[in-house]
Image (cartoon, rainbow, N blue to C red):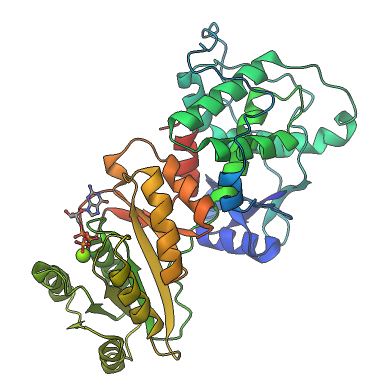
Length: 437
Ligand SMILES: Nc1nc2c(ncn2[C@@H]2O[C@H](COP(=O)(O)OP(=O)(O)OP(=O)(O)O)[C@@H](O)[C@H]2O)c(=O)[nH]1
Ligand SMILES: [Mg+2]
């Protein structure tokens, strides 16, 4: 893995610099606002610093194979369900508690990069002793809140690594207990055991016996962020119109999500948007979309066949984005699956298309696996998760991402149009999966 820091006058600029240097697999681990310092600070704008990583040879085990291989508990962990974790320690200060300042950052180089590149991280232990933290869920939460400081510390400690690397490290019992706690937290958040093992196995490669609690946490965090990847949202590359299909089971929020995304593109980015609906199964369905179309003053057509779809698109071919709403159906309904495939495949080749599979974060894991499989036969899709506000465990988003191999794009957190939607926030979700708020 390579990790670097990049600065820019906006978050987007810093991310772009990272992507240009690290390439397509770049994921953002952390974004930080850097306030200017010194006498001339009033003349300097705020800088944004992103910590970005790329895995050179990310070995994604085929998820299907992974699910079919016999269950392997993480070798170094034996977790009886009722095993209790150690009692909280005294008032030792958790790393990066408010008040602690990160070590001074390096000046950016011409590429906007700061810090030294970190290849195959293996030790975060600088010359100073690691602060000890409480091995409780509150302690964990506090550490997660200060993760950006921990990552920073890990990067700067890496500069001392060469002197330090060959020295044998004593085993760290606190680190071992901490791994158990992370393991349990991930399971409690419904991350499938196979994937918990994968994350821990991969994180273990960059840990060693003497790893500090902070180092373990940041290793696991980095691995999980890399696995979830950067959100892959609607790409506006200038070619228009772009046709965007929303497919998925009944009642997951397809129509509402279309309205949220379309209004964002119309209002914030001033794009011309149009709607098509192929949802002719329910009488009220077309009316629901028509209301949103009217509010946005956007054209809407009802289509029954792929020929009608192409003709309707032709009429609005100078628009930027054409959103196609589809009927929700049970993935077990063979005939409707075929209809949907015919419709999507029937789109004329001259148009660019994107397909989004909309899934509710509240759906059971086993059903999600089946849905992910059946919709893969209809089209290659990106994932949107809805109704995050209706559940407290987000593990299924990681499970289905890894199982399907499809990129994550948006997540929705309520019924309000257009507010309750955001780009999939990998860092936030990973922190929550690890026990943060
Ligand atoms: N709590 C919550 N409710 C949501 C969210 N997104 C959509 N809904 C609600 O879910 C219900 C169904 O939403 P629709 O957009 O009609 O779902 P659909 O997938 O188009 O449904 P069909 O067309 O019948 O398949 C509505 O009451 C929405 O307000 C969300 O993120 N959180
Ligand atoms: Mg609908």
